Length: 425
Image (tube, rainbow, N blue to C red; front, top):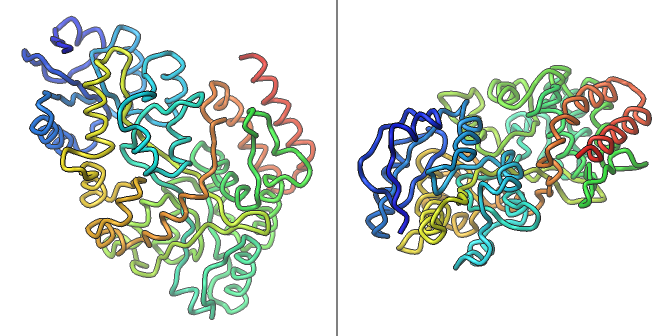
């Protein structure tokens, strides 16, 4: 059994200001400080069921990555850690976290998850954890405005959506009904393009991490052309070019947009009468597709991973409890996060859980939410070390194309930039 004693020297080494303990601990957990009291309550349940002692000592959210890298480099005391999918490749490649390969029950848990979420938790073909919370981007529409325009059902294709937007404009309901994130930042334009391109049957990179967005008739080209047409016609609100994640929902809440793409959990706010003028009117449907694809979306996941310093058997018991089932055989912790805080989830049994369905059905359609997860694309290219360097330059290029720039030359240049960065690594 792994016994670890926290000392003043160890705390100073990693810059950790959490309370010291003179007690030996079987399993130590760290993460960012979201609902710390709830996490610790969950750990008490874990200890009572498993007989293993457990502690939670978080780092500040805005320092989490930096603090954890320092902790890993010095030989971390932690056994289980929160991991953002954007950290996964870095931490896995460094050997700081270990895959779940060969652990008992892993295959059972994977069978309950959509492939898109499994992909988000994987590095070089191996899975590195179970979800803390997870979900997908969804398409939302204002049912009140749809009915006002005489529209009976949400669009199933992107081209149909543009026609519905034109109908709203023609009937005087709204001049610019579509608002989507097209700002030049990491939570906006490329994410939107990935979703729309997937609906046109395309991806930005293939499985060998080779760029395909520049190819003739690619899904990315179709997405850019669709957006450019919408901006030029005014059916896509020009404000989209400066709006990012967390800002788009303001248009939906105020009733100044009829159609948008949001992260699934944002629908809770959109349908909250204390925060939204359009509560009860905002519905989700499958993200539109085309003749080449039924739909497409992008997933997100925050996961629990086991460190290389851990007693893997004991750490796996905690990971199973937090991201999987407790001793009673239910997804206790993921269910609690969903019921009490509206966090997204992926295990299939929770979509059938009566308590969960009753809780979330007031603000999102759980069946459509589960169906949407089937269309999440693999974005493994986002986790290579040179992605962020490439992306930052790409934002301006994509905006230039939308504003009428030459798509051929810009996309070819972006593809060349990617290949050069890839060769350097």
